[in-house]
Length: 130
Image (cartoon, rainbow, N blue to C red):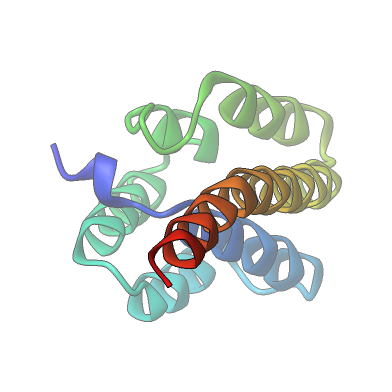
């Protein structure tokens, strides 16, 4: 479906803001409505609309997110389930946010490491043409 077009940064933004808003005591349905309105991609907006509808019908966040495995993988959904069952959802979301931020940093480092040799080859190519 459209789930492949949801960016990693959008998922990270969602997770971080969901954690902060839950910690401040805002009801999850209100949070989801706000985050849906703020979603940048149409694909993620549609997913969040479905999640919001499922939550409004009484489903757990874990069940609602698990319908979108290309965006919310098994680890993500499992940590949400553990947080819901133990009453520590805010902590689970904070942990997920931290892990996503670490993954983002690693992705940037890998991209940078891959870019440097390519730039070096371009420089050698242009230096050879001079």
